[in-house]
Length: 211
Image (cartoon, rainbow, N blue to C red; front, top):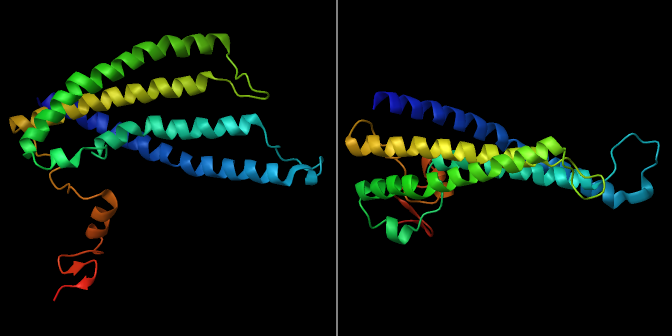
């Protein structure tokens, strides 16, 4: 079990590094979007001799490349931090051990088979696009294989993180490690962050201090 926990730690470190790195692509996507909108708004008022890229389908497609990369390649990080959506009405009524068992079964019976199937289907889809040099059908469009590679890599990372989460759930159930989410509250992330920062305390409520 020690080797499996070590493998889980390596996967977690890679997932966290990639997730934090691609999160910066949101800023890049916003800048590209703002630039594209500005150039389109200015239209013909920009002289032809000004050496700046004009608004084009390539810039529009670059935006969804960037957003797609953030969504797909940070999905594993979201899973690692336990920020995926739960049905609180049900999960809050269950013991932590029961939730760990449900999580383990969910990873093994749903997440891993689904991610594995998508990897199996996405690989030839990407490879055909790469070998053919497939290009978008839009005028001045970008090549398509990088977007398909992002999809493939995203599901590979999600599969790997699913393996890591299954290892951790099993280790916690066996008593081989502390639950990494033991301190997680059932509050929304924004509210939990406020509590950690001292924005809320037991003496505060919506209307002010309690009598």
